[in-house]
Length: 78
View 1: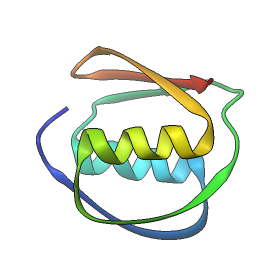
View 2: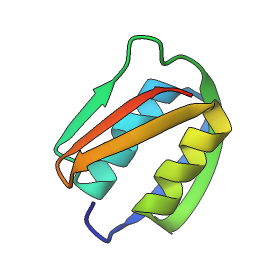
View 3: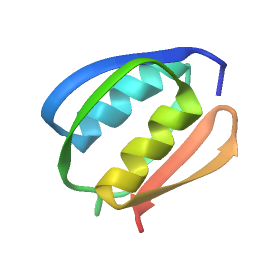
View 4: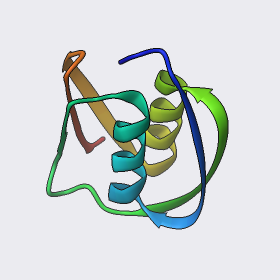
């Protein structure tokens, strides 16, 4: 992931939308989301490092991710 900051302010947002927003902010080329990924969350980030933002969303929503390269991140239920 590129060293950019994530700024995001969402309430009860679908986790898919949150992950796609992080993908866009962080320059992740390929985001693979398992069909079992569901849920929503409220997040307020202001210029948070990409890794911290992604890890926070994953932990809060009960998900896990595997990075295959800087261009491929797969997200699945924990």
